[in-house]
Length: 320
Image (cartoon, rainbow, N blue to C red; front, top):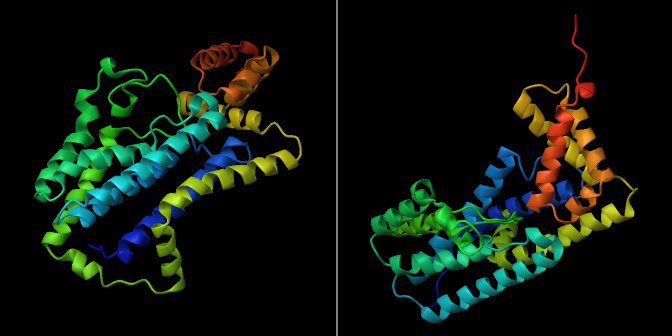
């Protein structure tokens, strides 16, 4: 049975794709030191990234309901599942060789594939059942987190503390709850006839057609856009003048975090510059550039920062 595509969903997915490209391009610029935006640590940027991930997971739940609400089309389901799982495996492999210890163990594609399995038993059920399950998963980390889930084996649960830093980490709890919420909302929309009304929108203008195209090819764009963007920024960094972009970015981000802690900027830049100089002098900096998530290296960096911060020679003179 052919399932009619809803243009409104393709547009929504297309907008999520545009937001994703903007975020990843900003991250690439930050990674190579072209900008000092706190893409990796800033609360606003984290909220932006979380909203993008949530959008894809929510729409995955909506799509699951629309495709299988009458009867589960097993062949179509498994074809989509294995396609996404294979794409997730490719992301893990590529990021392993690109980012070493920070490679993606359980990212957005891993979560979408696993969340589809979690949500499948709720397809065709009353919407309040899926919604209840969604709320359960969304709140699970608030009351079920435990050191028993720490480490690599249970990282997919989201209930412990993984022993790694990753460029993309989207565990099942709470994120699969977003997929279940999308499933529940789609069911409610159909019950009240909302999909019939939304299905009338065609988005025939140039912008609408372009956004729809992006939404219909979101997986291909996800897999291809970051290697292209990363490669272009890397090429620009390689052909440009020799600058210590990573060092400049470190000082900027370090000083920003310092100001948030101390409430003053008088010593922060000096302390962060001092930290970088010592890290370069003893060879730690070169190792950190290659393995930025290495805990022993980060501990050494933090210890040196505290030493510099306490250096009385770096403090501004006290006004009389």
